[in-house]
Length: 203
Image 1: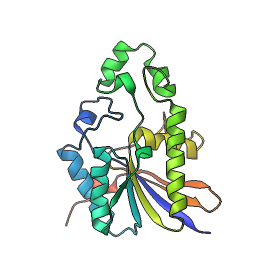
Image 2: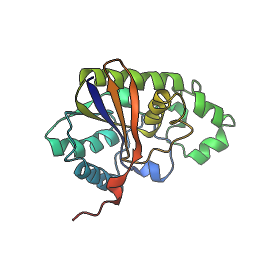
Image 3: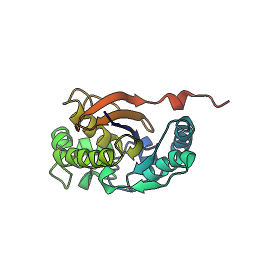
Image 4: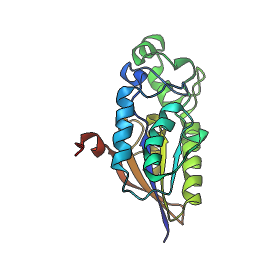
């Protein structure tokens, strides 16, 4: 049975990651550390067969994808559907500020749908639809999709029926979470939050 190999990757570090600010759709570029992480990721994946590289159209994801794509002579194809969750009023605020200003922040973080925040249901549906369409398009091939922590967790939550993902799993900057997708439409998890490239010493 033909299967698609999907390497779902979180973007590299940004200044707002360090400051613990909510990014959402705000287009924050990689910082110096994030660029170095992305370069290590690209080097690590240079010998992995890759047929296409996709990324969220937000700069931090596209910048990360470029480091992988360069190793394979491929373009980065942007997909808005791979974006992070839209966080409305919360974007730009620190997580500490959110906790102070919104007494219902825990419930809202889970469900969304108020303060201009995208609902979790919509986020999850968006990721499932986008990634399934890409997997179907590349059946029998291997693809990279660079996205965001919340988005990857939402997809992982859906594939594992809540055993992994949102509320359970930590997705690190430039981590690789690998899935397979088969002709019957079934997704399976191969590996979660793999960051071996960040420990590799260049020879």
